[in-house]
Image (cartoon, rainbow, N blue to C red; front, side, top):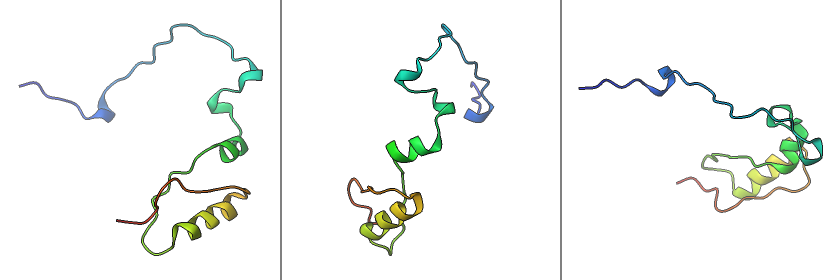
Length: 79
């Protein structure tokens, strides 16, 4: 019987086919992207607990992140 290793113990290697420079007019490398860009064009994956309404949580997110627009894509109600 073959033993298997847990995923965190598997040795991985990054293979690079070709090195290329990114053209700044098309964006930037994700590791160098400013936090403001993630906030303005990103998404927050939120696990809402029972209690506050979806509307309340959306208002909190807007206030905490300092953004004008925010919303939710479906119900945020806990099961």
